[in-house]
Image (tube, rainbow over all chains, first blue to last red; front, top):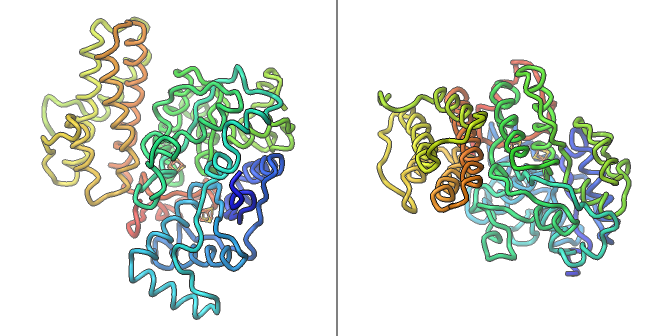
Length: 307
Length: 158
Ligand code: SF4
Ligand code: SF4
């Protein structure tokens, strides 16, 4: 296990304290079970993704840079963000500070005003929860640690549309089979496959679910989610595995809405990959927060001998 | 709008029929090509809505990918459907390469789901340009109309 991944800084982001609580809980539980340590950033701030970026994206870059600077001050060179949005924003800040003089200037000015060190790009690498588990532990070791195999569970791995987009902010991806692919991501497939799951070939793994629309045009989001869930079922999946609180919440909410508004019911279960992995490692369904999900998969999991 | 080109609603209806059809399609190779043509029709509608002439250029041998590249120029959030377009090409190619007819039929059905996704995404984007932009669930997921502008992000599309 690479030493620098055993203990990493943790940026949960505000979604994991609210809608994505079960993801926070299961991520921490899995880390503990695997002997990995997460140290939460002290006094981290929300990146202000929606509101601030609309007003001035450079301020949003500063807000993410502040979090990176906290990680550096705490002595870390890696920060793990399990939410696609947070991950994207930290990566984007890193890129902008390296390539955009205006962002650099605003960051220096606001950091000075706030009285903390100005973050210099290159000091801290942002990783996703998928990178963390895949690279810190790896499939071989995971296979050895599995107590309750996910054998017999067919999984459609759903990465959402932002995990690998835009390509240029992820210089470490597309570097051969061991690295993550921006066109066909596979880290979640690899991890759950090592835990015994049967991954189905799922053509909509990076398709947009209409997340940005869910406030203003719910019908579009509902139809997009319904199509994703129906495609997962057509591929034979019992479960759609997720790795982002926004994607997860969108799927759960619009699965229910599709039944209510469009009269189209899908039975596929929706679980965070950390919940599935946690149960495979022997943790209970309760420990990984299955009861907190809107999509009720308890009976299904029981039937499969999990939890 | 070109007369012989299906509208987005017609594409949705046609893919629905392919997905729900209880009989195998008679000519899977033609169905594979139709998937590609429907994908192109959807992208043409998007490009024309932006006052541009749809390109005939191909990328990696496919006009669909050329159209996608054109559609994403100046609107990076359109890249949210990049892989969906590539999946359409992939399904069409597998249908043509496959000799097992059950597998061909399966790929027609799955390919139709991918085309339906593209049609729903682009149809949604024609109503609300912000689709495909950054989104986050940190705020309550359902709010009143007062928050409509959260999707109108022109500052930094991804
Ligand atoms: S991306 Fe969303 S969850 Fe993450 S910090 Fe920003 S607003 Fe919060
Ligand atoms: S919630 Fe939907 S729109 Fe947002 S990143 Fe996930 S897949 Fe994309």
